[in-house]
Length: 69
Length: 251
Image 1 (cartoon, one colour):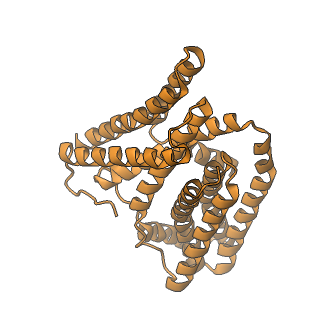
Image 2 (cartoon, one colour; image 1 turned 90 degrees about the horizontal axis):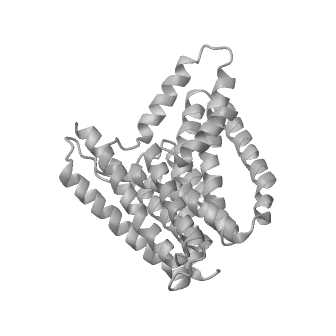
Image 3 (cartoon, chains in turn orange, blue; image 1 turned 120 degrees about the vertical axis):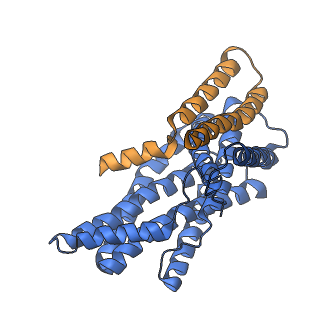
């Protein structure tokens, strides 16, 4: 039962592995740029806002292309 | 942050997300109640609710120990992952790449499984476990949603009220119709909830990084609008680029 709950917990955030991975990479890069390279935090916020739909597009396009084959 | 915009968006996000989860749990509990009996169905559901309440009481106060910017960042990142997962699924369902979730089908599947176990001497126990598992697993998601949309700005109470309202509404409708709530436009709800949670995630991750969004709380609405516009463009483009034979409409 504990394993099932843990699996559910992971599954809550990770469905398509590459979607989650790309989102985490985007956040890590923006965080590093803000904290280490003095990128203005608001610019980081806008980059995040632009990056999320781009990642979503890539993930859904890949799934649709896989289904169409 | 206690203006009307964040309160309204917190309650709405929590209500809609919880509504989807409670409908899914209700289907299984109903299947157990109708196929086996109401005693194991309600016992399993009640035990799961008690366990969830215990988890919230045990871990909830620990959140107060986390600095607010760290909490906003961590919750924001989790909401982006959680929200984009829902959004991806809703988009793929609305363009027909994956099948729409069907409560009637889920009900039939659970009923068939319970009927296969009918002669097992542990049938009541297995039925209660099915009900317990459904409520626990869907409930874990509800707890996360309530904490995530509420905790980062001290609005857990409003988020909790949204979830409670969803629970009460599903129970009332369920008691009235006494069958799976198959007419709930689940994919449309998931679409909206995915947009809301992703928008909360972007907003709070940005705040956690130190961004002062223009318009303060109202920026949340603008972020939602941008995410919604982008998602609808993705849906239209996918429908044109990868038409499927049985294209399902978002319902």
